[in-house]
Figure 1: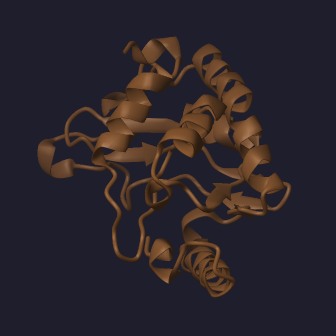
Figure 2: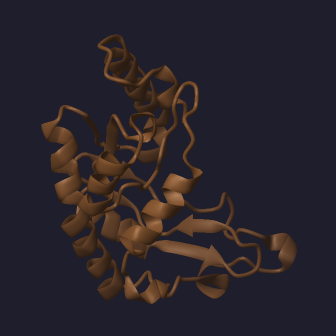
Length: 194
């Protein structure tokens, strides 16, 4: 897979890999980033045992302008491997500050860690590839979102404050999953353990 292509991995490869590793678990499980195409949803719903299928979906609904800014702001220190983000987003209710080290550098013990000297940008974190990834995301994700939403199986969350809201988001997910379990939807509170 070429990271700079912005393409998704083939559906059959993904389905086979996921299906071969998913085992029914007491309390269920969370799958992050699957399914990524409607073909993966259809394969799951027609060929997987009921106990292995996805019964509920959670969407972290983040607008493209936020995804674009935060993706283009990602940096990795070439000395210590630390991950940082130089982009802050403060618009339309979003309050997402940059993620920077406490001091003026991330790893002074290594003799460096200066943002404009030692931090690098991933090869695929450039404008044209980010735009392509967002376009591909919408081509594939929008039908999946509509599918789960039409079946009443989608919880849509907007993380306006990012990391600062994690506890609140987890609580919301736990309440939603518990309510669905009480309705006999096929999920239980264990799905919400993040």
